[in-house]
Image (cartoon, rainbow, N blue to C red; front, side):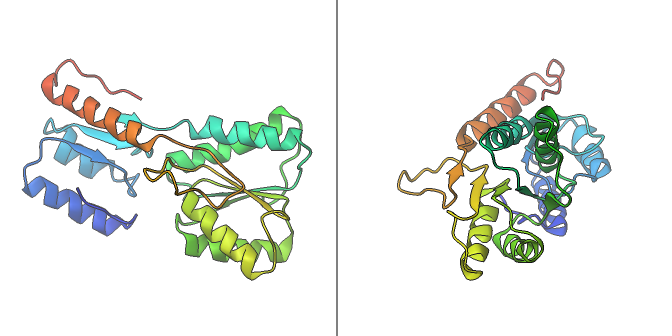
Length: 225
């Protein structure tokens, strides 16, 4: 088990370290979606299966397990628009991650489905940490005050809320809605007005089961999404 903190060089070093340990397979949340050649040459071609979580690697044929982030954001956005909110702002992670691009697509689709024009600069891509979310929120509020800020992670939502507090706003004035995660501690909860609960434990379990199946029947197992 290793953490890369979404730093490409750390991911590459971790992957090389795993190869030196002669691992037989890998479950990966990548921050290098364009590094298909490295993973193909060192894993796919050597019959070491790779199971990707949430983020695809472009042009790499391997299994991917992800939440339906696109549909989740579309549903949330449609509900907010139907309730009369019109100034919506989406803060997503880096666009090169497929799960974050899916969120932006869902946000756009909700506006299109209800015939509501998408406001200029309504979608912003930021790093997946609360510091960048803080700075992006502060910059955004200088231009226009949204009614609702949607984020794609609870960590980003925390940064948004801290920025609102510093600038003198509350989540009653500007609502914060986020794609959240399940918490192993039932007393832990999101600071946002509303947070979805994505079952991360189930995601990990299914990834492990799929990896085991790929190892047990390498010739029969096809890539799954």
